[in-house]
Image 1 (cartoon, rainbow, N blue to C red):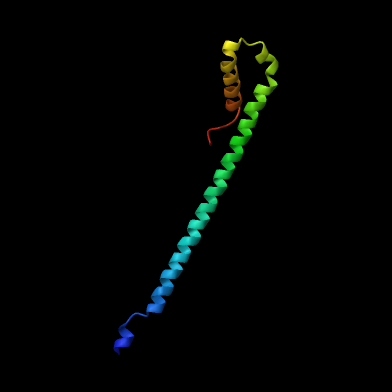
Image 2 (image 1 turned 90 degrees about the vertical axis):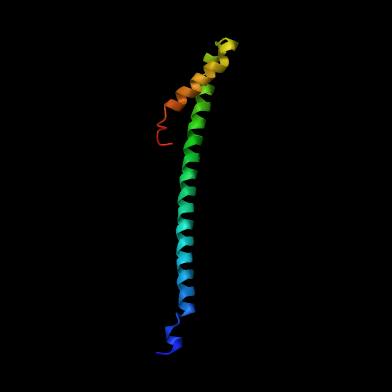
Length: 92
């Protein structure tokens, strides 16, 4: 066996490293895409909840007009809370 046969083929090693690196990049890209999709889903759910909270206050304007000004902020806060609790937020 010659000296040349005992030496590892550098091209094969480089190709193996590049293949591993490309696999890592693909996996990382897939994870990033999954995280982005998850975050977009959360944002969508939170926007729906926010809209419902704002709608509840808007729909309750006639009741809020009867509220003493000292308690108006607390009354709105209670409405926001009630709207929030009407959703299943455990998964958020």
